[in-house]
Image 1 (cartoon, one colour):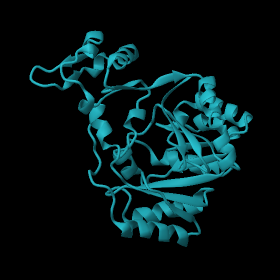
Image 2 (cartoon, rainbow, N blue to C red):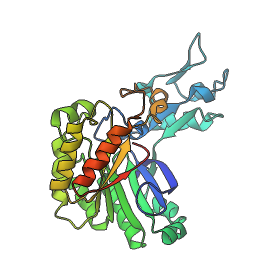
Image 3 (cartoon, helix red, strand yellow):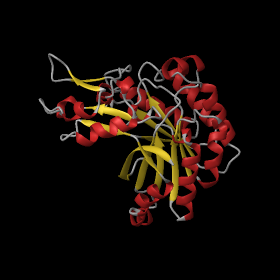
Length: 304
């Protein structure tokens, strides 16, 4: 079994063809700009959207001691240290307006396959398949490997979106049944990587190098984040690494956006990246030009 938090059908940006994207909980990084904060923690999370909350409704506070109404406000006060999966499920179950939302559910491999089989006709017509995303799918190595194996046995194309910030042993079980890896490269400077993500650039780069020994198609994805990796030197250093030390021939650039900013408030978190999206076309043009100069196929994607 594993814990997931979303299933997105009819996606066309997460691998070839029409795809079903399954989002798995848990990540080993804390990127300031993460647009899926609901997937970072391995545990079930509770999200609260005050815009949907019905004033005067007390249903959730009756079932959960972690939820209370403020004296002078309609805002719901959440004591997150008191929450557990059962309380979260109970609170969301009684909310009549869906202001409370549970992120995280336990699923078996067969649960997942039952959902994937519904979309097989779309995969067959378009050359699509299933993509595991997150969070970080390889943080649940056995569950991810089991899904990929089951999908491959039924002729479904498999892909994984990964930050590669995991022990190498977490990747190994999935590699025999993986058709495509979409791997993030955030920076190659260790100090800057650590400051913005709380992780190790060396771990990511070492995994990229080890993947060269496998006959696995790899597409590198670079989110262009203002103040982090959009200067010319950072772009050049990342592209040199991709061209010289990885097996990838294609690179996707994803300009920074802020579509997920509202999720932080709903999860009781603080957003720490820029409140403005990347609008400087010169940066994007520079990245594409420099990638092509190194013999890489550069593709511009619409989101990061």
